[in-house]
Structures are given as C-alpha cells and as structure tokens.
Length: 106
Image 1 (cartoon, one colour):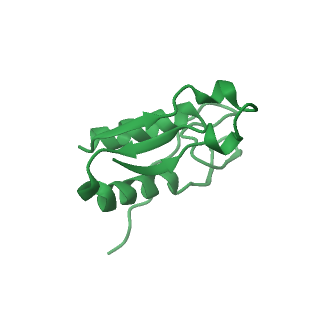
Image 2 (cartoon, one colour):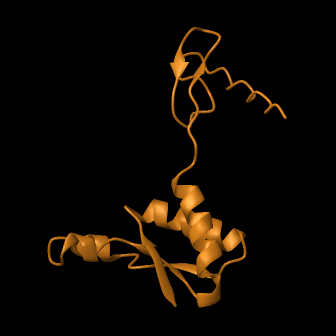
C-alpha cells in the first residue's frame, strides 16, 4: 500500500477515496477516527489519509487526485446583477442556475 495524501478532514478524505474508487482504483481511508485524540497526539498525525492498494496505480491516481484538488473555479454574472464566484452552480441571491460555459472556439 502507498499513502497518496493526508486530508484536512474525514469528509474530504471520503470524497477523494470515493472518486478514486469510481475511477477503478483500490483506495481507502486510514486514520478515520484519530481526530478524537488530537491533542494527545500531534495534530498532523491525526489527519485522515487516503491510501492506494496497488503501487502500479500511483501515477494515474495522483493525477486524478491532483485534478480533484485543483478544480477550476468560474466567476459569472447572474441575470439579477450579482457576481458569483467559486464553484457555485446557482446564484446565492436569486437561485438562478449558472449559465452554460461558452463553447471553446477551434
């Protein structure tokens, strides 16, 4: 087994492991319950970790994990005049859906 990364919390670790599993990688979350002993142990030793079972999957799994950790964010102007930033797909002010991304010109 090989450790891919530490996650800031259990929710993120589970999301990353699930995405890796859906892509066909044998991934798991370790240190699932150590957050409760932070303070008794060094905090960096209590963070959940995402592990990969097969060493030969390391490069493509790290590439997928990198793309998950660095997803592009979009800034858009809603029809109500509000500027919406980040990964939001609906306007926080009026609830309108994010417009479709403009098609890339070839």
